[in-house]
Image 1: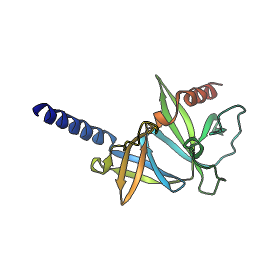
Image 2 (image 1 turned 30 degrees about the vertical axis):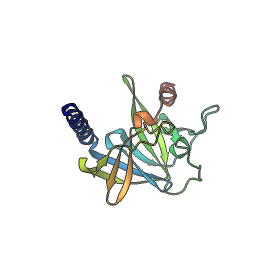
Image 3 (image 1 turned 180 degrees about the vertical axis):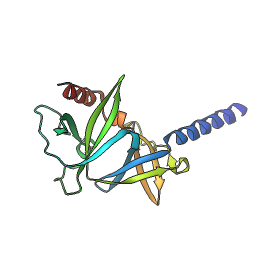
Length: 176
């Protein structure tokens, strides 16, 4: 019985530590009717939709590349990456330029979103663990859930959203 209490206490302490680590400022954005957030330090800038040059033989969620002040940056359509229906771009469609870690390198990539909402300061008490959906559902890219202002925001781990394949593509594009 004592070991069960100790194990439960350690699990609660680990959960509280994780909530404290996830607390902070998040840039929130919309895809369809859902709201997502990413750590503000991972978002380098928000830009309006630019002309995107398509790259042959890339996955459907890779929209192409943009020229941002002389730098070629790949752009991923996050809607398509998440298995949502592709839609026509609107006046609110924008690109969030993010930095993700690839080993010892930091890689820049644009993510196309329906609209940007706001920057929120999310407190530890507003953060919940990602619910378990069973073995067939991969939610590794969601680091936590926030219940803020009567709404649920999925807090993304951008390093997990962008796979090694995508980060390698971004790295190769930026080197050429």
